[in-house]
Image 1 (cartoon, rainbow, N blue to C red):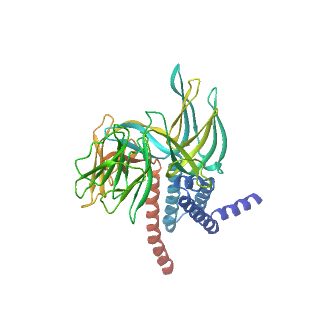
Image 2 (cartoon, rainbow, N blue to C red):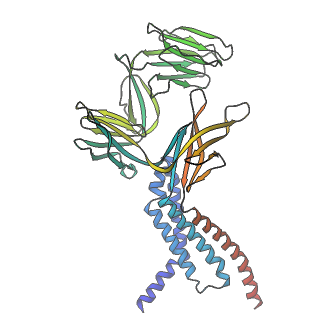
Image 3 (cartoon, one colour):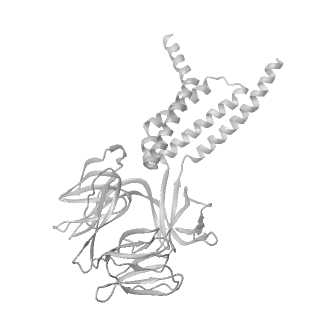
Length: 469
């Protein structure tokens, strides 16, 4: 019959070596493109566009069909087919386990300060959240939306999110933008101080801005020296280090203190703008080019693909970040990833905007009780670090670089840590993984290895028996 012969031709193609070669070449090509995207952008972009794309899923499905048909083509199976069938079944199980992990698995991060507890994980899926308050009500959540802009490149968005009497407009997405901090003098006596300094010798030339703004670090570690700024005379550490301290005196004039690790002596004086201050270390000299006792600090961004600067005035360039241009009413803002902002209107309405990673509930509280670092002898480089944590209503557990913690199907790995300005660890960072397809993948791997061993055993035995016959 025609349909029978047609079915046989289709089955022969699906079980053929030709389809296997086409599928494997396509898979290798997609993996090569994914590697290119990962180096050009980031892992998240490569996952969305390549590794988890419909094309990749189609190739995986075709590979499963090819393996299944190739195994069925040998039916009824004989002893010499055992290894072949087990190997193909193992590969299919590994692919099915990978699909399960991709659809239901979780790769997240958890950061805890010493003594801090949390039950929330952050996953690499950005979202917009908006809270609103007024003179008559506290903050409440009024909008929450997933915003993965990878598929919407180029960057112009024009997305409207209703907020009741106002509308949030997502105007433009910048996957790579430079953040600039703009410092201008202010008449507000409560505003933070800011200064632009330069430290230089024959081999070093660094020029930066720093401020006492609460969201900025008032200390800057430059390797051979540490620069600090404060609103009043600082308390100096007992151990002498190569440090410079800038602070205003009672008359509002900028003073400096230079500490030397070699001599242990202090050098103090009044700062004169653009005049060199000899530090006494390695021929380094420090200049203060600008000083604002009270400064207005604002963040501006420039897309790396744009040619012109977008802001004016004294600026400090920071790292490359992801950012959004948004508008509520007549006010426009830049939202940096994981840096919330507050927008206030004349009618008393206040909006709290956040463009950041999605939070999921862990299901239990975890508390960081202690954190220890082992260092290589004679250096400050960490050789190992260990966190002591307590699970809610449970005993204390240790998580180290080579000993993860498994609890409620979650696996916690010691990923990294954070230090304060004195080099003392104050937070631990964990990588959290939930892999529901792990057992399926392990079973598939064992079957594949067993099948290959069976193939090596049965094939020579079958060949010897055939020759004897």
